[in-house]
Image (cartoon, rainbow, N blue to C red; front, side, top):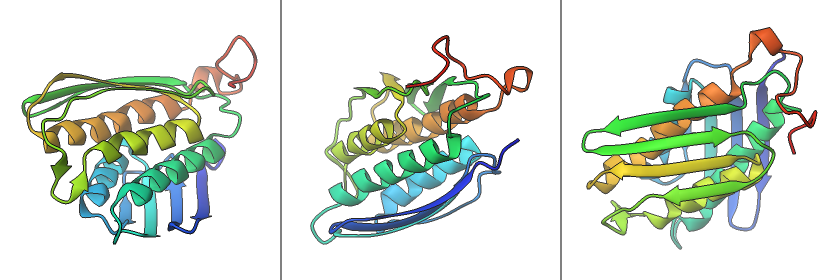
Length: 198
C-alpha cells in the first residue's frame, strides 16, 4: 500500500495552518485551532475515522471563528486530496448512520472528484458555547470543495445542537474512513467507468 501520509501548510492573511494527516492511522490526534468546540469536533472526526491528525491553526479568532473553521476545512480537504492521489484502489463510497443520544444523522460520501454538499441539518440554537453553529456548514463546504467530494448530511432526529453537530463529525469520520479504504481485490483500479475521478 502506498504511503498515504501528507503534511501541508496553508497560510493566508486570516489563518496560518499546519497539518499532518495519515489516512491509514489509528485515530491519534493533536489539534489546536484556537476554538475549543472545533478542536473537539476534529478530535472526534479523527478518532472515528481512524485518521492520525496533527493540526494547528493560528487565526483571527478575535473577530470570530468563521475564517478559522472554513480554512481548516479547506486545508483538511486539500490534505485528503493529496493523500488520495488518483484515488486508485479506494472504495470511493461510504455512509454511516450516527446516533448521538436523541440525535440521528446520516453522512454519505462519494469521493467523486466533484463537489456537492447537501447540509440537511437543523439546529435550534445559533451557538454552542462561543462557536457559531453556521460555521459547521462552512467547514464541510470548504472540505468538499477541496477534495473535491460529494457529501450528504441528513438529520432524522435531534434537539440538542451539540449532539447534532457531534453526530455530523463522528458520522463523517466513519463514512470517509470507509470511502478511503483500499479495496484489496481491486487495488490497481480507479473506481470509475471513466477511468478517472474528476
